[in-house]
Length: 144
Image (cartoon, rainbow, N blue to C red; front, side, top):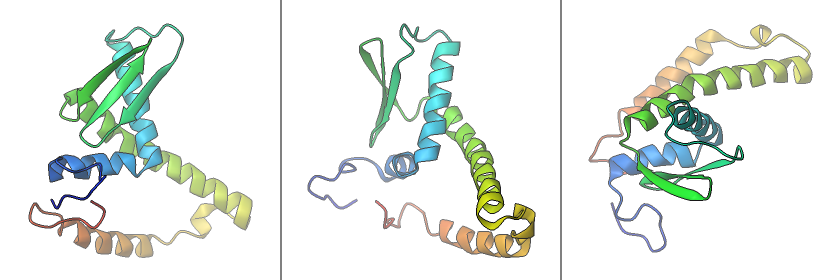
């Protein structure tokens, strides 16, 4: 990847940068991933939260957990992170679906099923999937 002055992904391998961009640029995915990490760390007695304050920050090549005045950094290669990250996507889908349902009810005064066209959704999804095929190791993403 070409070096850019002040760019957070300099010296970060592309496969790691792509993963971190998903987190850094998607607030709901980041939120659900952080909730999963928090619950995992507490439920597995990795951390004990004294004052219910825990902060998780996602960086270009790792994430940091600050709890009880201590900061611990973890690699994105941690299996518990990958599980929490993947679990965030169905949570995001459920949250987005509820937001769309509420929007249609409040803004349009109709049930969302009156607005949604599954044929259009499927067509757009297929078009989107074509762009994923471009993301191999020889192709630089415009977002990186």
